[in-house]
Amino acid sequence: MVNLERLVIELCKLPAETQWLEFKHGNFDPEMVGKDISALANGAALLDKNKAYMVWGIDDVSHSIIGTDKNLQNVKCQGQELESFLRVNLSKNASFEFGETFVDGKRVVVLVIDKAHTNTVQFKNVEYIRVGSYTKQLNQYPAMQADVWDKIRAVQFELLPARQDLETKDALSLLDFTVYFDNLGLSMPSDQEGIMHYLLEDEIVKLQDNGLYSITNMGAMLFCKRLSDFPELFRKAVRVVLYEGNNRLQMLKEFIGTKGYVVGFVGLINFIEALIPTREEIHDSIRMQKTAFPLLAIRELVANALIHQNFMIKGTGPVIEIFSDRIEITNPGSLLVDAHRIIDNPPKSRNEKLASLMRRLKLCEELGTGWDKVVLSCEMSKLPAPKIDIYEDSVRVTMFSYRNFSALSMEEKIYSCYMHACILYVQGEQLTNSSLRERFGLPESSAASISRLIKAAKEASMIKPLEENTSTRLLKYIPIWA
Image (cartoon, rainbow, N blue to C red; front, side, top):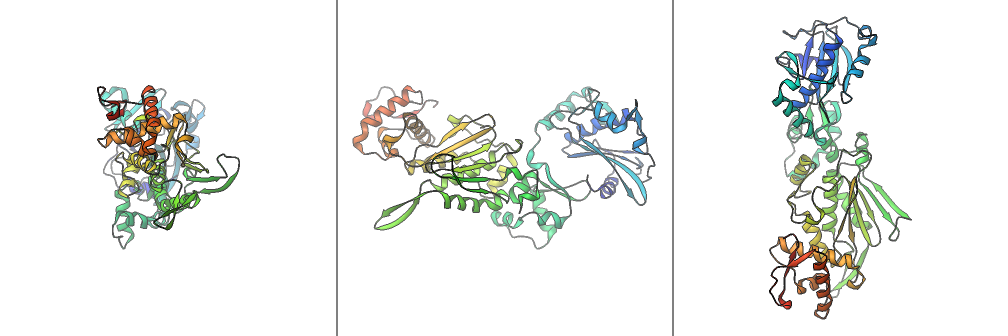
C-alpha cells in the first residue's frame, strides 16, 4: 500500500475529480462501490495511470478533508462483508485494496485500484466508465470502449513499477545513474533534482500520485545496483554456465548477474570472453591469441537476448551456456520475425522503450543489422552459420566453433550457404562458387565440392540462380525469397 497520508494530500490538490479519482463523503453502498471500481480501473487504463482511487472523507466540491467515521467492517451486502461481496462480483482481473489514514486528525478511507489489465474490469459482468461525474456502462460509448481496449492491449512491462513510494534520495540510492550519464555523454547534474529530471524524461523513474517516486521495470532492469533489491525481477538476471566438453554432464562454473543490464554489460562480456576457448596463431612471426568465437558476434547475440526477451514470462531469464564446441544463448519469448528472413526483415522490438534507450546508450543499434554482424563475423572466422532454434516459450541461438568443411553435416553446409546468399543479397551482391569457397576458406581445387553444395542448396529450395540462362561458370545465386 502506498503512503496514504501523502497520497490524500496530493489528490486533494487536483482541481477536479477525474476518470481515475472519485471523492466521497460517506456513501459505502456496495453496488455503487462495485460499479465505481470497474469504472475507475477502466478509466485509469484509458488515461495511462497505474492506479485509480476512491477516497471517503473528502468534500467532492471543495476537496477539503472532512473525515469519515464509517467502519468498513460493518458494511454488509446480502450477508457478506463489503470486500468479500466486491471480490465475488468483480471480474478476476480486478485488483484493489482498502486502507485508512489520518490527515489533520481526521479519518480518511482510501480504496486503491489497479488499472485494468488483460481485460476491462467488470462488475456483475458489466463494464463501466466515468463520464463527467457519472458512472456509465462502457458499451454505451463505443469509441471510448475501443480506446480503453487499445490501451489495455498496449500495456508495457517496461513502465510498470518495480519499486514504489520512494523519496528522491532512496530512488537514486538503488540506481547506478552515473552509467546513464557516461553512456549518453552527458554532464551529470550536481544536484539530485537535476539528476531526477533526466531519469523522469526517460521514464527510468516516475512521479507517483502521492508525490513520491517509483522505479520502473525498465529503470531497474537496466540501472539497478543490485537486482536483489527488486524481488520480482531477480529471476531476470543473466545466467552464464561453463561446461566441461560438449554436453551438460559436468558444470565447471556458474555465474548469475547481480546488476542491471547496462551497469553490468561490459563485465558480463569480459567474463564470457575469459571463459571461451582460445587458440594461438602466428602472424608475421608474432604469436597472437584468438578466441574460438568472434567477440562482436557474442556481444550482439547477448545484447539481443537481453533486449528482445519476453519479460512477461515469469521465473526465467537469459541463459548463456558455453561448451567446448559451441555457445548457446537462450532467452524467454518467441521470435518476432521469420527465422529464415532474419537478415532482411525490418527490425522489430518486443520491448520498444527499452530497446530505444539501449540504442541511445550504445548497447545496440535497433537498425536490424545485429544479425548481419553476427553472420559476417562468423564468416570471417570461417565458422558455421549460427543456428536458431524456436521453442514454445523461448528462442535459442547456437554459435559453433571452427570445424573443417569436411566435418560439417550437409544440413550445416546448406544453411551456411543460404546465410551467405542472404548477407550478400542485402549488400547488393550475389553468391558465386568463388565467394562460397572463400567463405569456407577452401582453395580453387575445391570448386567441384562447392558446386555440389550449391546444387544441394537449390534442391532444398534455399537459393536460386539470379539468371537461368548463364553459363555454369558465371552463375550467381540469390536467396529463394528474393
